[in-house]
Length: 252
Image 1 (tube, one colour):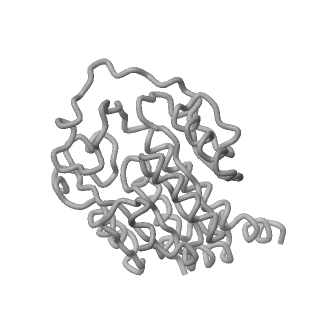
Image 2 (tube, rainbow, N blue to C red):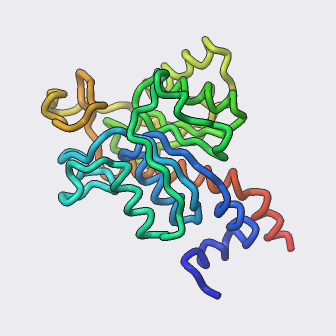
């Protein structure tokens, strides 16, 4: 009998779809990258998902975030994303956490219950802590590096953090991981040189509701760069979770 995932099953196989149905994913950061990751995961068959973000949709999100519309401005991103998920798949189990992931909030999360963790947050402190928690729990994690001030989505690559180049955020993350002797961290990064915004936007004007936007310089962004990073992350998760099952199905 046909269902909403029938087209995906044609490529992955029935066993793989059952794996996705049972998998539990946590996505930290529901913005330009994380929102598209969630969208693709849910449309691929992921039914158990945790959304972590304390930000609200603001006007400047409309240019790149899948959950951002004029009707969602002022609403919590996790609430908007949950509503969207359930509209796509009413059987989904969605847990929302209205907080930013910080060392002070890490005890709110049991990483051992997740099959995969997505790091789509902005701060180095949070990213390093997410990696450390995932490693300690033996849980797979994939991290997004810098997607701001970029224009060419074809320059994204998937690699271990030790093999990254060009991206300033990846450089800092390499150094921090090396200090802590952290190895084998899968990341999505861009080899495109960072562009300088034509005109600076003061941080206080970027979002009256955003608690996370505490930067001196606000990066420029487009609809087609963060979204591609998010979709790549989703594809890596699906491949990692279902690779063996799909290979068995294709060998029959």
